[in-house]
Image (tube, rainbow, N blue to C red; front, side, top):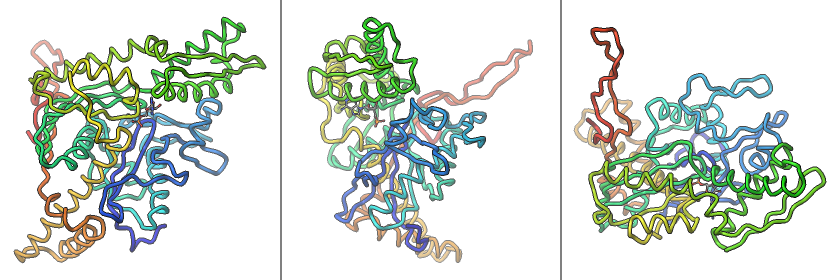
Length: 437
Ligand code: AMP
């Protein structure tokens, strides 16, 4: 699907550390996820380089440990690092190029599914991404041949997805986002189609993988006790366990008990893990996330009484212990109306439509006033056509009025040198300042 003339569809892409997803306005005018060619709604952000072929998704994920020289994962953790490259078959790949490979697969699958070309996209990134990391995300999209019309923070996208379903509400919402590789907490004020970030914080290297590792180490120790062999030292056995512990973790979100069958060097171990055992093993990780709740509440200068909604985002928020902790600390039932795995991509698709509507409106104004250049007239016609094709007529007006305001997640300053020659960072715009500042 690469008919340039047809490349008009507007989409939102959640480019995740472990999984990615894409959403658009479907033929019924509803924003929905576009499944990949395996008919799955999320795709592992993992790449396998095999001979001349590059494979993205489940097959790559299943070889991540047993074939590490040819598999790349967790690329997002390196976005914006100027010196980071992965060398595969003698070729150097930057984080932008690797992310572009993931984006290309997601988009080409989506194009096949909907039978239309996709060009204009919004890609999401964590709230704490700095300028370099955002630019790298943008560049990845460009390398993938996409027109990246915006980058939006993941919690803001989740809030937009919530806000669009609750246009009559004026709430202070806390978004707790625990994904496969990253974690953040954000407090936002959502007033219908006005979304304002009040405070945000998190950890870029904390996520589902750490929970998996805790369980994996537990199983490995039992295996050593039984057979005096460490399955973590055998690539194939290790890979097998990585997949099995993640499955067991997911099972434990639904059932009180999960079975794990570990194999290594002709030996095997059948074991059971209870939900209580899993919770005990991973308690320090959960507590680590808990500390951020109060930190962000303080940064927003609020109390728990003033938080109206708690929105869980990320696959890990399906874990009952996560839900219980959040309900205990915030004294609220969690919001059930948003899908934890999908709301970021869905919010991004809304944001893409919002940006396109704004672009079309502002160009139309210029045309009406007779001040548009010839190029702007062409752009106006294109933007209007893109909106007409992608966005249901009845919500175009409403989208035009959506306002989103972010805060800067890092302090910004300049390095100064005092009389003694010592370097000092002089902060000019404090962390959590509403933008633009
Ligand atoms: P995300 O990056 O938001 O898609 O989150 C992916 C993480 O959520 C991975 O670590 C998954 O193993 C984890 N996850 C997905 N579904 C579940 C579930 N039902 N129970 C526990 N963890 C899950």
